Image 1 (cartoon, rainbow, N blue to C red):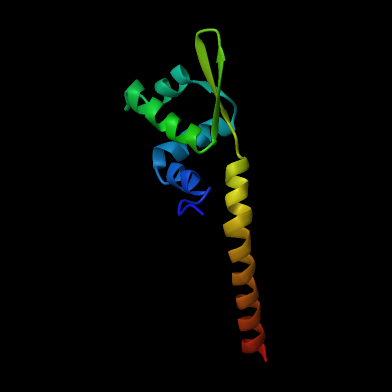
Image 2 (tube, rainbow, N blue to C red):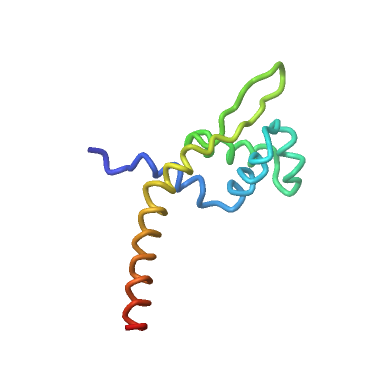
Length: 107
């Protein structure tokens, strides 16, 4: 078995604040690469494209070519998988500990 988890590209993609900002924008609907470049005027086109590439490799962004434009669509399923695998499991455990603590303090 590989030492690299299937989730590693998703964690890598989510680690950078700019990529999270791109995902937040795409939550409202697909955007062309040009639209994203306009939104992030402090970054050059090459940098925006590099961030999009990392997001694509994590399957968080799905590009669709329409003529000369490239539309970037959000795919939130990898984030849901992370939530199901990591967050919900640990949140449930934390809640049971808090519930036990509350019972001990009241008892």
